[in-house]
Length: 325
Image 1 (spheres, rainbow, N blue to C red):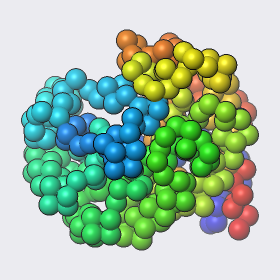
Image 2 (image 1 turned 180 degrees about the vertical axis):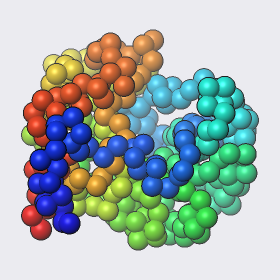
Image 3 (image 1 turned 180 degrees about the horizontal axis):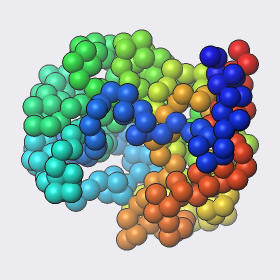
């Protein structure tokens, strides 16, 4: 059955069982017969956008403290961090297995010999069944992808690229230090090596119109992406963007919960239906967050999206431009 016929069949089902969007847990079930949890790791990497290799100051929105768990510090070994993370989850889920999530900064920005040692240290930890590696699209080489491809023959490996926006002018404004073409090429190359590949995208960057945000779904759908994380723009203390906001507050238009939910639904409708949407929002610790403060947990926003998709009788890929191909 082709994609179009599949959705036509779904529309005959009761709305409460109708396909809404492709979620991450469903994706993981394709590869694991047991519960799997990501454990964040700070392996002490730097970033070429901070140390002068590409630029200085980093991305204007970035403060890595906003997403690192307390146990993730670069002065502790990868094994120590993973064991601490396992201890937290194993109390409630003793049968849980884990993916080592190299999250902080640029997790391919090092000599390949060092990368191999760190990745293999993680995989040697009991009940760690794979790697998720967050990085920049300008920080991968064919040598590294070849090595990861070999690993991927025996274990789960997912590379997540910070794309953030498909608009080159916005990429320059937030000091990313690369173009969208660079991101697209890295995604295509990673897929050619047979690796799982994902992307991060921020919605609501300064100067970004609503239609521009939604149109990005069309562009990303043409790439061999498997997973996607959406994030609302959050203004975080200690960032360059926070200082920009103090000087030029009129440049910023923070989205309300309802506005963002509408954008997400519009984005999903145009997104290729097999792309796994891992998350819709980010959640910065309250002590670091300046705006917007919605007072919602991630799972509460997920429930809101699910409810509104059902109410509107819509779903991921409904308006995808490739559905009739």
